[in-house]
Image (cartoon, rainbow over all chains, first blue to last red; front, side):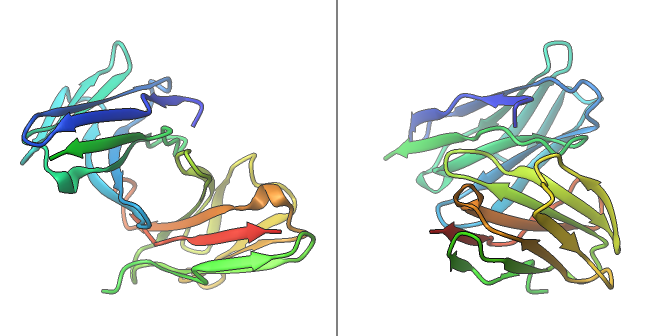
Length: 107
Length: 112
């Protein structure tokens, strides 16, 4: 997705927090999403945020949205080895996905 | 509910052949989406149906690609005269609302 950018790799130690960042260009996007893809598996919707919200918390996940800077982040608290996967952000208007951030959790 | 299913899971074909993939969405989901994903990339949107109507098509969907959803339930994606560049994972998703897309496991196409 040329209009959605993410850093490619992130490595954290088990128990630490992970922060995955995403920038997008379409300011008219109504919803922004975070998906998780484990090896050999389909994409799983983790959470989404409505564009008029700044923050959404869902158990260990916190989504922050800065509309002015068109910046979206996903924070995973107490990261576990089972969180190792590729994380994609996506926007709703043009169905654009980012290139994905590969999260590696070190035991 | 068994989730979104796709068939086949893998397809190997020779360049120039036609292939057809099938997607069965979650029952009662009126929206159905097709994406293509290549290694190291995020899914790229191809097309979107609401019921049987094809509402959006990406410019990525060349004349060799066609998708149908004749009765508003399952959908097929056909690629004619396949090229090596068509090798990818083809993903189908369905939803009953605009933001909760449920993805199938994908069909991996290899064009030799």
